[in-house]
Each structure stands twice: as structure tokens, then as C-alpha cells.
Image 1 (cartoon, rainbow, N blue to C red):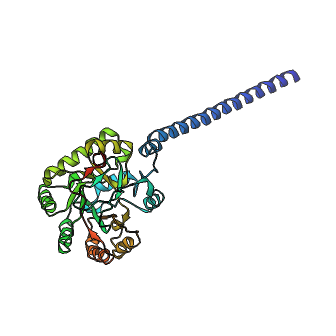
Image 2 (image 1 turned 60 degrees about the vertical axis):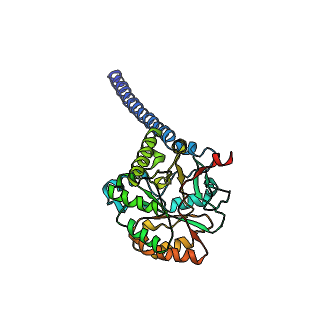
Image 3 (image 1 turned 90 degrees about the horizontal axis):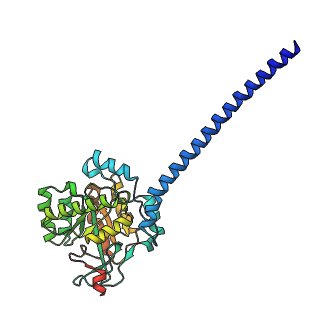
Length: 326
């Protein structure tokens, strides 16, 4: 009787150990599966994100991040009205710019407005000093739209010129004709890509297609060659630099950000941001074709003039820096 009892107990213990063993094996399999999945996610992230940022600025600080998540930007450009695109910077971009001012290229040779302007291809240009040492460059992104003519009218009243970066898919035949008139009067029109996409997140082939298409479309509409490109969100990578150099397009950044795109309900802050933006000779000032910008533009011009600054559009016929120095 006792023997049978012991045998039954041994069987029960054996079954219990087997159950525990199976549970332990399942737990182990689950843990290792989770570790493998996490490793795959980290590997993918390393391959497709930080690496291309690093390559974009091999010996320079990383400035590929613009104002917002590029995916959000794409959604905005397709679902919101054309004049509701956000601007190209935010607080994160400001902090990055403050920490990486040496990462952008300032053209050191000072030249007059009449002389050819040596500009570096494949580098980020945020300042163009001139011989008079008192010229600044007003630039407007995200057009053309219903505010383009208003901005041009203000410029004409003040007898100054500026530069515009247009989104290819927004340039109609009518706006192309108006753009032609703008250029004939001394303004400059560049590309802001076809659909306001973040170039730094795209493959080289897609970037080349986008930039080629945008320059061709805009150039045909306005009747002038497009030589300048401003990357939406300030997003670039190594391929952007290589491709723009190949295409002969200059990458135009900025060193003063008005943040006007975010100030629809506080337009006065646009002027404050410019006043606090450390404007200096050759500064490229970032603005957008927005209602609040139209409202504040006369005051911006008045303030900069009171500081002794002149205004100019970007050089109409820039000369590559490499050519100039040969």
C-alpha cells in the first residue's frame, strides 16, 4: 500500500516538474524572441536613421532635423490648404542651429552686388557677405499662393527685391507668368521641392527625381533657370549634397528665422524674432508667404533699414566657388 502511494507521489512530482519545465521553456523562448525583435528594431533604426545623418555631415555637426516630424509635414501638405504648411524650423531646430553654426557655410570672400558671387555647391549656405557690409537677404518659402502678390507689392513700394522658394506642384501657368514678371523686376525664384517633402529621409534616386522635376517645372513656368533650392524642414543628407552639386543647385539655408509660420495669432512676434535673431551683414532671413507675414513685412523692412541695412535678392547668376578660385 505504501509502495503504491510512493509510486503515485513520484509520478505526480514527475508531472509537476515536467509542467514547470515546459513553462520555463516557454518563458525562455518568449524572452529570447523579445530580445531578437528588439535587436532587429535597433538594427533597422541604426541603418536607416542615424547613419544617413552621420554620412550627411561626415565632418560637420548634424543639422538634418527641421521643424517637425517629416511624416507630419507630408500629411500636412496633402490634407491641409496650401497656405497652411508649417515653417522650416521649430525650437529643436533653433537649438541645433545655435549649437552648429560652424556646420553651415558662410562665404568668406566679400564681393559687391555687381561682381560674380562665388557660392559653394554641395554645402549649406546661410550667409552671403557683400562688399558694402550692409546687405541682407529676405527670403519667402511655401509659395506661390494668394499672398505672393501682396508680398511683391510691398517689396515694390519699398523699392527692394527678395528671393522666393516655391513648391513645384503649386506653380500654375498663371503663377508662372507672375513669377516671370517678378524675376524680370529683380527678384529670384528657387525650388522648395515638388511637394514639400523632407529630402533627408528620401533615397538618392528619389531626391534626384524630385529636385530635377521641381527645377524643370518651375523653370519652365517662370521662364528662367532655377539655380537655388531650399530643403523643407532643413532636412538634408549626404545624397542631397552630392545631387545638388551634380545638378548645379545651391542649398540655401538661413541664419535668422522669423518663425512667422507659427505666429498667425501673434504677428508682432515676427518682428521681435528678427530683432533678437542676431542679424548681421549677409544674413539670410527666413520667412513664409503667410497672411501674418504680409501684415508685418513693412515693419520688418522699416526696422532693418533703421539699422542701416540694404536689401537684395540672391545673386541672379551665381558662380560656383570652385570656378571662382581657379
